[in-house]
Length: 348
Image (cartoon, rainbow, N blue to C red; front, side):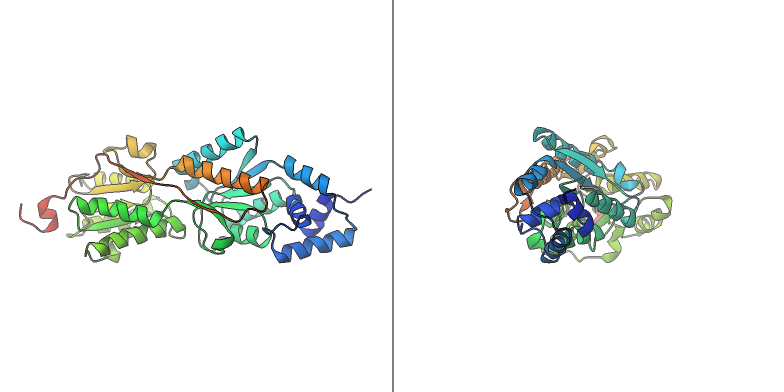
């Protein structure tokens, strides 16, 4: 019985597509992975069939969509639904299949990715997140596998295909909008700080303060990775301060809605006493009371662009890694107004 490309992949511990790309000396495959595959080919006596290899690549039209590890919160965030919708629509048009990959934690997610690769079930992966020290990205990079990030690369930026917003600029514009209304005491409410977009938006917020001569106050920044009742205390303590913020930039509509709920519990009026600017422009932003002023990051287009980059690199293996920036824009609603004069220490 003749040796197949799947036999080589199994022995080398890589995907069939990686073996195919190694046969073509594809630059996206690392030197270490190529050496491992070629050693397996020699050990099995495999003779590359370039016609069959090309056909296998053409028929491998499944793209894995990877969500960040989470037991619950990820699946409640409208950003991921919109991004998946963008990916799916383009994949349908180009006759590619997509499959969603999830895990309750990093270990489970990484194991699912490895199983998918080992069984040759995906030609490449779109990660709908980017975070510091992510083991999934480390594994994909070390194995020389094709992947696209939605978010900027933490490492190996010149070798990574990614699609992102300019989150520093977006954070700056959100804070600048509040400053233009007259706010000087501006807080920042965010989620998991290991996610790179959260840090970038915070950097933009700080840059706007600096450019307007407003001192940065670390005690005005509240970070939480999830939103159970136990996480209420830091925000409530901040809102009890006599010089509390008169406005907040929230890194996501979910956090902004959470802030509005806490303000309601504490009988603090939005926007009369606290203004709020958030991100994503999801259904939450439109249907909460008051409706949220929000930065629309074009979640659907982020997904579409990620799928387009993935398919381009599948069909044109010699392409260099590309970086795509999707524009954002501010949608004004009723969650913001000029601060009451006495809130800023000025006599009415």
